[in-house]
Length: 73
Image 1 (cartoon, helix red, strand yellow):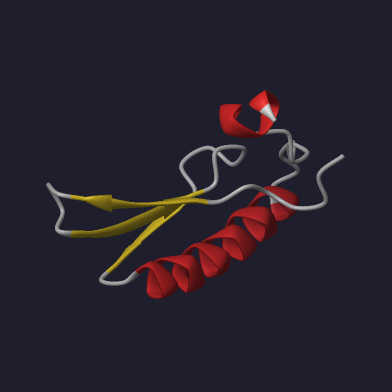
Image 2 (cartoon, helix red, strand yellow):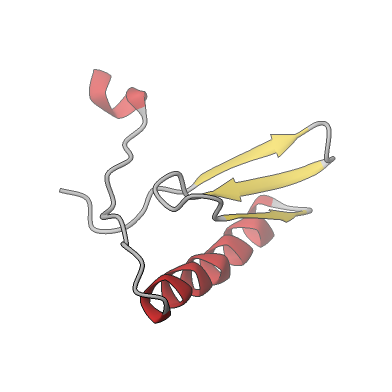
């Protein structure tokens, strides 16, 4: 079982920068000029997302997302 949320980081031609997102946390994403900055920003966004969900009594989904590539091996 996974211990933490999966993070995707990819380059966006349209935005001319890197986007990081956490598929299990709806609308939890960040944008930056480098992959490292995008990762740092999405980790901040994750903590804010979780804190807001807890403060408002919202359901916090467990880490479930697993890219297809991991299922092949």
